[in-house]
Structures are given as structure tokens and as C-alpha cells.
Image 1 (tube, rainbow, N blue to C red):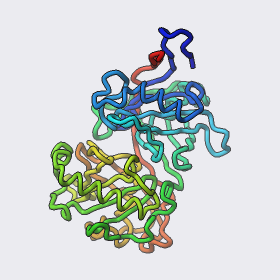
Image 2 (image 1 turned 90 degrees about the vertical axis):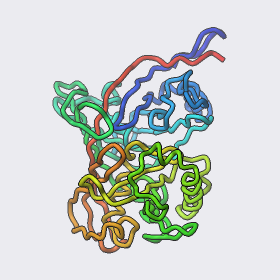
Image 3 (image 1 turned 90 degrees about the horizontal axis):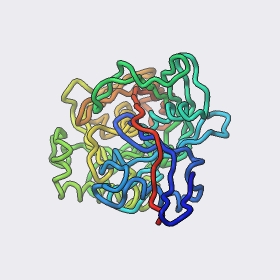
Length: 368
């Protein structure tokens, strides 16, 4: 990393801007940022332009889905090629959160690592083993590398992103309880919190599921309609803060987890419909790991989701289609003991994402 020498000379930091799934973020090599988290976070706030609701003086896109950072380094672990740290840069506050993973930006980690030479590409497809530092979980991203070069061109499409790109398939390994310590951190498949029946679950992302009808909603409201409902937002936030205490997450007033997912009957051929607070804005789609947690709740007995669905699932490989405001998200899961929450296991959760390199260069930080 180049440091300022004189007061008028800005600091410059190599980086890439990439779309990963339905999010967009700035990707850095760990070696190009300060090792001290406080200094690092101050620089990243300046890079992204926070705190400012427009992020007009930075690279952020004025929305949680476009105010994200991925920090990647070569891994010293035997079971991983690279380490990935995700940081959520709060748009309108001087806050940087590292308490969650981001499965969307994860889709860009493999291509970025290959572009940066952290590992060598194969001749056709390259599997990149990724250790997610936020929670300690691992994933494998399968990247298209014809003739040893990362390709972003292809016919794969995902809802919420225009056009098509090369597919990036991701397998998540042993992610149950990665943030909260167990799949059902409260010990129950259902709890009553502030008078509302909820399911608190963590299969890669801490999520609180609520039947939208319990809030007098159809579940088909647009994100803009939900965000304009201040009474609803206050209820959801109060519920989030209370549920977090039961989920071993403590005080989350300045954290981005748990996510709050309103569920309702499917309307477009999926299994169920969702509207997700992330946590103070409503997602235009649904997060990758959030969708895995929701899908997991669907196949387990006596959760808010399974009670809504009234459907049994056989052990083995199943495909769960989760609807969201801009389309659908398909999660392939390999499960066993779905009828017994004490013995239930997800052996594999796989999904399709795409990624695209948008820009590479240097982020400039004013010398002050």
C-alpha cells in the first residue's frame, strides 16, 4: 500500500470493484490494507464515503447491498486456498461490521483470488476453497477458467441481475450454527418473542422467520412499501433486538444480524415467499446464506416455515425454491433426519451465483 508522504499526496490502495451475486463491493488483498482493524476500518469508511446517505464522496452505492468490502488473502490452512473477510460498511453511520458472512460477495472471491495470482487456474474449471473468517466456515467456489483465464461471460442468469454471466457454483460445508453456535440457537424450533411466534435459525446466517400474516401483511408488499411503514419497521427492529439476546448474539443495535425474514405462501411456483430486512432496509432479493437458513427451516418439523407449508420432505438431495421481490433463489440441499431437530444434518448446501469484474485500479484516500 502506498502511503502519503506530503500533506497534499493522497494514499492509493489497489482494489477491484466486482459484482458478486446480487451485491456489489470493493475487493482488496489483505496485504494492501493496514493490519490494525481500527486503522483499516477508518480507511474503508473513507473509501466508501461513509457516513453519508448518498456516499457521494466514495465508492459506495448508497445502499447496504452496494456498500460492501471483501478482503482476501492466501490461506495458511490445509483445507483452504484463500481466506475471505467480509465487511459491511454502514452507509449513513461511521460503522463497519464483521459479524456476518456475505454469500453474494463470496461469488467474486474465487475469481478475484485467481486474478490476483493467489492460486493457479486450471484449464477449464477451477475449484477455489475459501475459508470465511467471519464465522470460520468453509465453502468451495467453482470458477470458469477456460485456457487458464477467469471468464465472466456465459449463459447463467440469476434473478435480480440483468443479463447473463459465467456460472459460479458454491458449495457450503458445515455451516450450521456458524454465528450462534447451533442450528437452533434458542434450543427451540419456535419461540414467542414480544408476543410474536418466530423461528430463530442459523445455517450460515442468523435469521428470524416470522409469518407475514402475523403483522397483518400479505407478504407480497414491495420493499419500498415495507420501508415506508414506520410502525412495521419499529416492530421488526424491537423483535430483532429481543430475539438476538436469545440467539447468543447479545446487543445487536449496532450490528447487521440477525436478518428478519417475513414469509408467506409462494405466488410464482416456488416453495414460499420472502421479504427480508437486512436489517433496516428491505432486500430487493434475499441474501445467499439467508436463503440457506430459510430453506433449512422449510424442511424441519415445527418451524414457522414448515407450519406454513404443511409439507413433508424426504431425506437426501432436495431443491428448495425461495421467492423474493425480484424473482427466485434455488438452494440445493443434502439432508438427513429431517423429522428430528436433535439429529438433523445438512451435509451440503449448494447454489448458483454469478460474478463480474467491473473495475480494477486504485482507491485514493485524501492525505488528511
